[in-house]
Amino acid sequence: MKFVLDAEQRLFAATLHTLLADAGTARAVRAWASGDTKPGRALWSALADAGVFALAVPEAHGGAGPLPVELVCAAEQLGRHAVPGPFVETLAAAELLGRLGDVPLAATWLPRIAEGEALVSLTLPPAVPYALDGDVADLVLTADDSVRDAAVRGGTASLDPARRMLPVVPGEPLVTGAREASAAAYDLGALLCAAQQFGLGRALLDVTVAYAQTRQQFGHPIGEFQAVKHHLAGVLVDLEFARPLLFGAALAYRTPDFSRDVSAAKTAASAASYTAARVALQVHGAIGYTDEYDPSLWIRKARALYAAWGSPAEHRARVVDAL
Image (cartoon, rainbow, N blue to C red):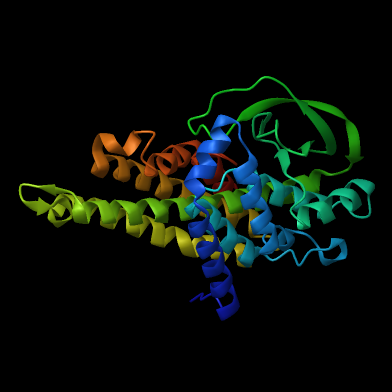
């Protein structure tokens, strides 16, 4: 099967790429890591104006979706530019709330998510009970068989300084009988995390190729050396194999194969983005992990996302169980 984005989907992705490239996201990432969320919130508002969050919200609540292919396009660009904040968690929360039916929690928060007025941190099993950016989120939820509002406390270090993980303390149940909705939210969150990783890997490959074309050793750009070429080509192959799995999973949305296809995509994207980060660090050398050098932000995020929304081992097990 050959899958090609249509003209509107390609234009949407290109528009987001231009918006984020012009916004200087590296500055927003550094500010977010230091506790200043204003630049990140400004990016969030711009993305909402572009319709990103409405893609996950049902039309009945002011959204335009759910539109899984467009969501994958958006998450890829958000990953490519390392946009800070719990955007995957917010989009997954929209999936959760949209499947709960006519309940006050959904009626209150879905329109706010669509308009970009709400940052939502969501914790779902089998993930550990930590809320991403729970200290700045407008709503923190935990969900399994019941959906609960949650309080956050303390915090834990992350490989990515712009990803603050805080332990959650679940409150009283707000909605019960939510197991299927929680499972659906987990699947969409894992898919969008995979798309984020794919975009991150593409960004790292692009910047590493550019560096290899200019960095010289022995009077030649290091990109002319066969060993470097092989490593970069390997990254490209891994990414190109991950891409059809991403969009194949998006097309399987709300079918019995969705969970399996999401896990296949997440496994491939995790491996590809991690390889891209490792090769980027090897080609750049010591400059690759200096704080002042923007690609270091991408390299650290790739490692932090490796096990986010399920490790490759967990997702490979889900694929095997589905066979």
